[in-house]
Amino acid sequence: MKKYLVTLAKVLVFLIVLFEWMRVVFAFYHWQLIDVEQIPYAEVLKGFLKSLPLDVATACYVMVLPAIAMFVGVCVNKYTKFKWMRWYFYVVIAVYILIVIGEMGVYGEWRTKLNCNVLRYLKNPVEVISAASTTLTVELASMWLAFTLMFCWWYVKWIEPTDKLDDSRKSYWFSYPVGLMLSFGFLLLGIRGGFNKKPICASSGCFSNYKLANVISVNPAYNLVENMINANHLDERSDFNCMDSETAGNITRLTYKTDCDSTAYHISNIERPNIMVILLESWSADLIESLVGDPGVTPNFHELEKEGLLFTNIYASDNHTEQAQANVFSGFPGLPLTAVTNHPEKYHALPSLLKPMDSLGYYTSYYYGGELGYGNILPYLEHAGFDKIVEHKDVDAGFHSGKLGYHDTDMLPWVAKQLAGQPEPFFTAVLTQSSRSPYDYPRILGKLEWTKLESDFMNSAHYADFALKLFMETAKTQTWYDNTIFVFVADHSHVTEKNYPLESFEYHHIPLLVVGEPLQDTLRGKTFDKICNSFDFPATLLSQFGVKHDEFIWSKNVFNNCYRPFAYFEHDDGFGWKTDEGEYIYSGQYGPTNVLLPDEARDSIVEQGKAFMQHHFELFSGY
Image (tube, rainbow, N blue to C red; front, top):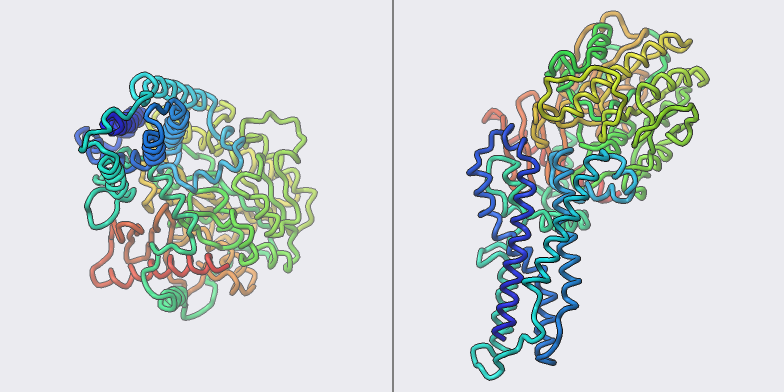
């Protein structure tokens, strides 16, 4: 049994070295972010020590199967060969390195660890590959192959069990019972994380006030599996169960309750204007000079502001395009862990803005230059009831296609011309795509050289802004232009050179601009400064037509004279909550954090947000 125990120890060390090596690779890959965020190097190094308990737990999980196989093999025949086990570890090595490499790419784009929200995109692997630049794909694939081959060779060369592991049958100390207790006792203890009162979990690897230091420290495989298990038990989740269900519902209803229902002003000077919604892919408020951005990134949007109504305090409730569809067309806030578009069985519970627009006599259409299968967007849009849906395969205009579809400078002017053939009034949405990775837009503009981080994204937004200029120039030549209200709104935000953390309102701050010939003169060049969400769009629009919106229970008419401002966003295991009094971020693991609230209002506002999240999650689970 001595060689058996020594072999297990060697495997443990091998796995720990694998984990630490890939941690070094991750840190070096994102070294620029470490410098930009001014994370002390000592803090990064500390993460290598703090990561050990979770690494040991991960290794012990991996070792259970080979430990059992080797023990049984030795008991049956001391000359049992264990070369077959190399295939098990080949898979372990390849999968683990793939997880790390995937997380390296994901963190660069979304500033989050690899989780089930990201993995749901694997349902459409072609789209995933298309969303990454060819250079990045080759770079990451080469790293995966090189490190996988290196560790597989090392395992066979130095770690693989010998043909004979039983060399001391007569020794008391290494007899079968003692060997069994020592090996499996240690494995169980490692899996549990020691003798602590609570078993180890992914958050045990978090030790720093710097998010990236924690990302580097937390074992990505353990985190991913834990996240997937939690996501697969949506109905059993307790992270958001902060109070009894009735209390959560009552507090949420009081949060939405208003003392009157009267619209402060109407945006259009005609009764039934065309409504054109331009969903701006990944646009952050950081891109807009009049909000918090730097001059020169979106100059054409800035020009439009002079004749429009700019919302200065609006936030996206989610982080992905498919969630945004439910925001805008169903008034449905984003959810942690999952997206409602991935649950067709729950579509029946979602209201659709298209139905009341249809009853008002509107023809409805949706245009996108890419493929709408990504994120289950197409089934949702079809269920929502658009009269016409046009995507990449439906466009035969001879345009050059990028990896994701037709570029905005081609697609947007084309859409403007297509609308001439639609009945009026119409409600039309178009989703842009060039400001989305892999940013293979045509390089027809000068490069923004001053951007340090996210240069590709910032320049893609600069290009998309130029496409908006071409779109509006084409629209002005169309017969439908004079009767059309344009709503430019981001589907969600994106990390910019300002590098705001995902768990912040600064990150989720987005632009919304209303412009068009029918816009009331009193609103031109003005701003709307109240706190609101993109999922407030359906209730606000329907109120402009005097249509009841009771079925849109999460959406608010922000132009209501008695409107009570608040905003919400979801993140992986929690949410953000913001009112006029202040804001806070909530985590299922850590509770309220980053609390910026006055002492006298803190408890009540914290309860508001917790009740909203719990009630929202419970209703969704029951659909």
